[in-house]
Length: 357
Image (cartoon, rainbow, N blue to C red):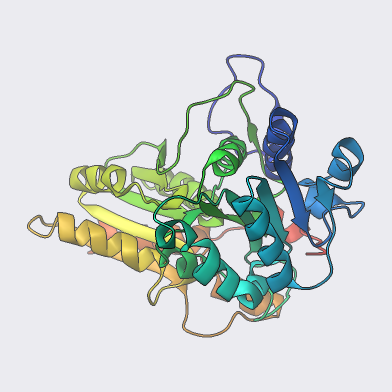
């Protein structure tokens, strides 16, 4: 599926999200010999859904290699390598499994620079796939990005578009701090125009994907794609929605969101995660604190306070979708009118996703 956000002006290629991550990784491995990839399945014939495809053949097994199922151990290796001057990319097939290495990530990676008075850099990218897929249930489809947002010393990025995924990967690799790179499974096959030109660092910068005047919708990760679809449904009802992709969750570009809400007076944050203590809560609270003396309306959409379900029918009810987003936004703009719930077909990436991860 194509989700174009910009037209090519320099014959830039159209890439899938996974190809964009691959291109960013390969570019940096070619540019800098200190960059290497370590993780489960990175030398698999499918190359971690295409993101590490044949890197071990091109750069050798010293720079792209598989490891046993030992999350704590492999992240420890990556942390040590980063302290020694290398730039590792640690790949986790599922973000859920990063719970097995939280001590290494939170107590070692995130705090080392602070504890050593800034004398030690820790350039490390930790990749993890998140979100729904083919009914993997509560232990394999969680959205835990707010965990990492809570920890000083970690940067967190969750690009939604292929055009941002390449830039974010390059920025993450070049940064001298640990970066948790969040990848939603439903994004891997989506296409966009990806510039061939190197861009300046975009760390901590959001993107206004669609401009509008009636309300602001902030979509995190795959929810940005669903919000873009909701934007089209709302347009048919005469409602102009401004769609913002935060891209970086920590550091968070809250100023762009505040500026938008000051204009529209309404904010809807859509996150494919639990609402309690989540990214949506943080964004909403920061906007409320900044605009507390203005007449604004703030709402959220996300998970119910239950584990992620397994069956497809329950998944479809559990996750926000273009219909529920558009309906919520419509009620915010037109509260006096009858509730509107548009009928939609299942989106292509959800219907066609086959896994295995």
